[in-house]
Length: 106
Image 1 (cartoon, rainbow, N blue to C red):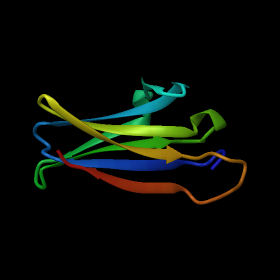
Image 2: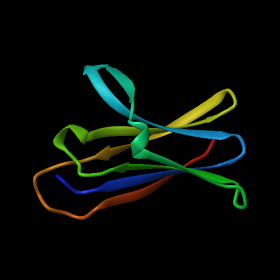
Image 3: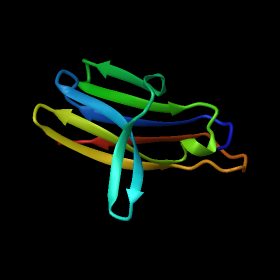
């Protein structure tokens, strides 16, 4: 993936009230992780009121080694939230563009 593009789509129902956020998970010690905001330019939000779905597409272009790691998509609805994690791998090998889709439900 080094120098290539990759994207992950996170999707949730409830376009009118759901909020989706992408964070990068940084492990600071054996049992402590911190969520860090990803750059706004990496995320595209898509709202489809016809299907009542919202998507947050995380797109990393020209991937660098430091972009590798665990990313978390968080869905917030009122006072509730849930998340899913995905791993973004970057290596020196030439390989396919990563594209996967995650669905979140509360």
